[in-house]
Length: 281
Image (cartoon, one colour):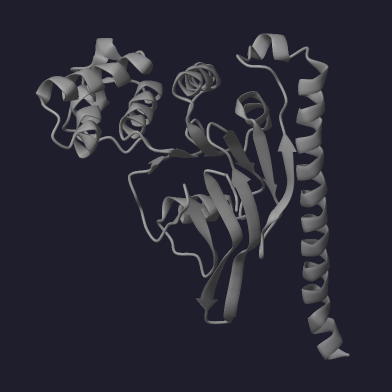
């Protein structure tokens, strides 16, 4: 019996197509403990988003299953919150009201005072108290993403799922939000699964990096444990030899997998190109 908060067992996803069955994901096995920060990394089409959607309950696995805190999931639930690359804030509501909407979902019989205190708490966590009365159209992209994170955290989920949350932001804003996320996770001890294409981001934030093989039939190729002390300082880590080793390990995996993928694709293209010649012969 696993003591993990999150347990993915023989997870797979198959889709019917006019040309037959397409296997997107196959035999994904992963255990994640409470408070762990896990990054999923790999080339486009490697099944990262499929894994995230299966854990979120947005898709139903065709093989295997996902267990959260001892219960198998069969759909979306409040114990799992998702932060997308697009913040998805309601444009007609203020920053305060967007977060309040999430707080009210878990308020139960709590009164207005409790709701207000919760909203103010999460706005303080993301350092957005000053913009509480502004609407999404009046704040920057980085601020919108912070509010999206606060709204997800306000649901008090056991697992926070993040699909490239900083992918559309400029480098400086991205760095600030990464630092904010590390600070928030240290305070709340969230369990986080994040999709990223950024190797430095993965090493900086993660306790564990899950590297996916190329599809079809994508699966976990390697899992790298990141043993770097917290809190982490990006400037200090730039000269840290262990940090550089982790970074090189991920880059090596991605490069080797991409090389193999390119070779297979080239061979297929050559075969296709030579087929008409064979017919003419």
